[in-house]
Image 1: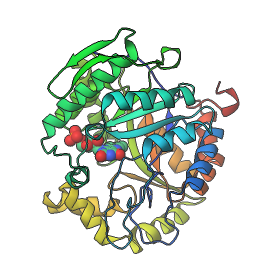
Image 2: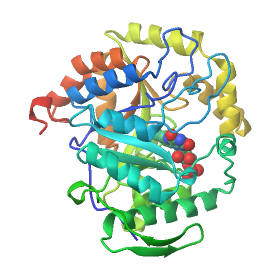
Image 3: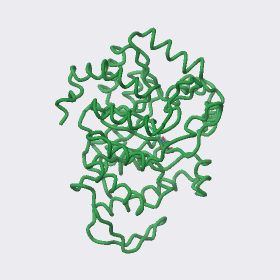
Image 4: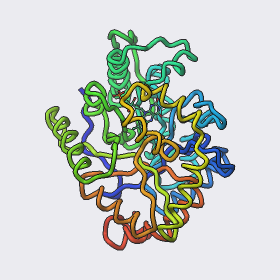
Length: 372
Ligand SMILES: Cc1cc2nc3c(=O)[nH]c(=O)nc-3n(C[C@H](O)[C@H](O)[C@H](O)COP(=O)(O)O)c2cc1C
């Protein structure tokens, strides 16, 4: 088994930007100012994030949108080419392709990834997902409805890729999903540093997969109460330790609205996420994820968070509040934050002048001049 050694971002409290390769980003809003995932916007954002010492960019792998009036995610940039283009245009930041493993052959993918690894001087990362959206898989003619089989396939996929990267001798591979002859590819990852691997499995099967192959796992939080976060972090660590992993990094996905005052942040949030929520698209997302079958109480709570963060928890407030919330979650065991923002470029600019310097001066992050 290819258990990853302990590998991590430069900052103990890592900050990342999430979902910027998709239309509307991490929102479901009718606001005319919603995010447009043009190459120009993605490049400007990546270069800004790189300059201010953000640790990673994380894409979403999507093939269709959620419909409604605005079709969020209906337009999105493919993640291997997106990451490779951005790696060529940045210097320090890690950039993650999110990839549906069932949709691409692992030999082909390992070649793409090692090429991105060389172009980015070791900064390419893989968010390995096994998929959840049947309609998307049907677009590809891939019939993979059984959850356990998707992860069984993912395990073989990761095993083949690791073997290609690790082995200098050609090998045959005979499994349930792949029957490969005389496999051997050059070049290997630069300086023998394999791409960082992320995974967002939530089920027991998904967690087993993550523990086996990932450097960082996403812990999806239902709310941000200290009690719940500590409990979920504890359960995840226990699961990892049972499988012999003592150093699994934990990330969470979150939506942040940060404005000069609490009132301004709340007003801004109200305008795009409550007044202008695209309810039809939210209902579609809930139906596709099966959330419409859950108890009413859970559905109502999800609907409130859906327009900002697709159901992920929100931090809405002034810079002091946002800083303190990030620190509180970090102290509870969250190593990294994949952050959704309304306007990634303007909002990251504001965070770089307010929250990030506070995190640096309090010693949670290296200041950018001392980052290397
Ligand atoms: C931060 C985060 C990012 C994710 N990105 C994607 C993605 O881009 N594409 C996708 O199909 N699934 C994505 N997922 C879904 C997960 O891969 C996974 O299917 C889901 O969390 C359910 O877990 P399970 O597969 O263990 O049931 C993401 C989940 C999270 C929390």
